[in-house]
Length: 101
Image (tube, rainbow, N blue to C red; front, side, top):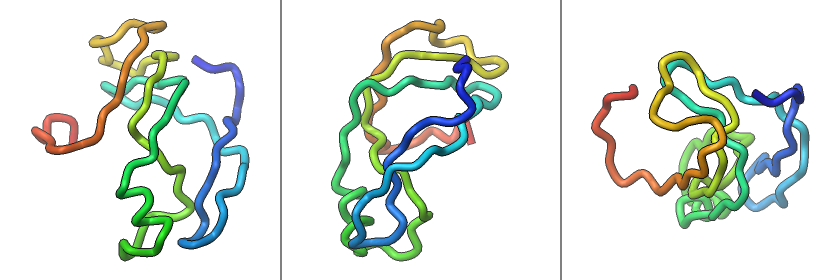
């Protein structure tokens, strides 16, 4: 787990506004989840729709980007698929089996 109490992030507060850097609380992995240290992040077209104000009711403020390359930093209870220190890639969500919801 990270020893920091906050991480730096670029936040979108409203469509059409520049992103702002701020400190946000370190995420804590829940059951079955892993905590990732992001090394590279892609911003997808859906993110750009949010920035351009083309999607209704986005959850703001928002940290854009979800297509990432990262290292597993920590694990929540029952998270066993990836060991701490494993390099992983997180792709776009094209469908979901509903197992983790």
